[in-house]
Image 1 (cartoon, rainbow, N blue to C red):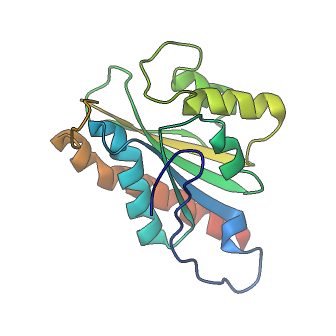
Image 2 (cartoon, rainbow, N blue to C red):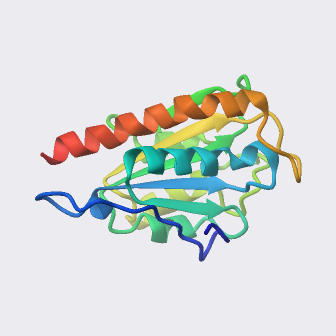
Amino acid sequence: MISSWSASISRLPVPESAGGPPADLRVRVVGVGNRFRGDDGAGLAAAQRLGEAANVPVTLLDAIGDGTALLEVWREVDTVIVLDAMRSGAAPGTVRRLGGAGGTPAAVAAALGAGRRTGSTHGLGVAEAIALGEALGRLPRRLVVIAIEGARFDTGGILSPEVERALDRAVGLGLEEVAHVHRAAR
């Protein structure tokens, strides 16, 4: 069950693959957010759906604590797909894929607003965790962030209709990344 940012790791079943490293070491999906703050729960909802569809390890982190927990979650993992809500001024429900092939961690952190005051509910957000991980040499080989533009982040709120509709697009982008990792491992 999902609980807090620093200690809660919820994983879905993972089939043993034939040959190659265990699936757990190739790709991990991380959902970040707070399900009790409206669209901030988009990353958690999308990650859970992605994990069920792809049958890969899924880690769900509520944004209660410090984002340095991300450094531990993506430790010793080849590929990490992070799903999170964002507020960039784009239309609610806009889905952005950041990172992966050709995307540097610094570019991902900048796109997410590292160093800017964004009003994030996270003590140390995903952008700052990426910047810190890069400085410490503790990033996965491949890091992809799928960001979903939120409309409302009110306490006790639910996902807005725009964000709810955007979840399928976010999951689809995540499934493309999982398929890429598994093709590359063959």
